[in-house]
Image 1: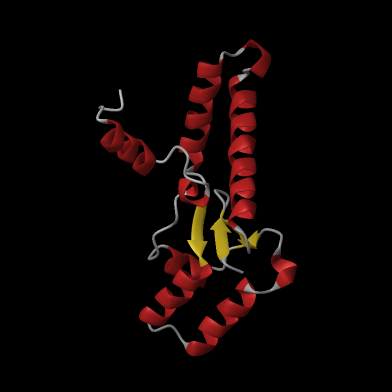
Image 2: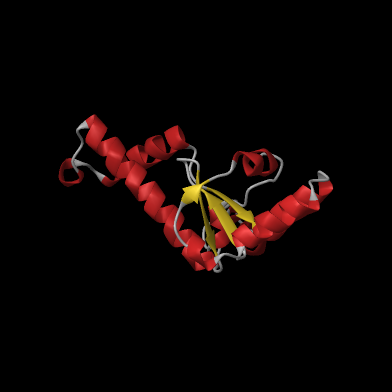
Length: 147
């Protein structure tokens, strides 16, 4: 597996492809929005797009969203932290276990390692249409401020 995702509920799931990661994270975000709207007694039919957007941000700010890691980075960090070779092999086997295409509880020993690794922003998993690098480079090329 190439990616391991830690959900806001401290569950892990592994994926081979970035598109799978995107879909999973979007599902988690949408679930958070649905729960937030239910708690606030909002209905999508009566909400404006701006209100839905605000609710989306508010719902996901409470949960901190998914954290995405490359499995290679996690294993390298374990080596850097001088983790036992047997533990590194066990984690590597866990990441490559095809039966783990479902969520599972994050082992506590792995939580400590993940705190030391910088997660990948979900925006980096997409084609990058709206990431800041594209906005800035478009402004440089077109001789405008981007406003």
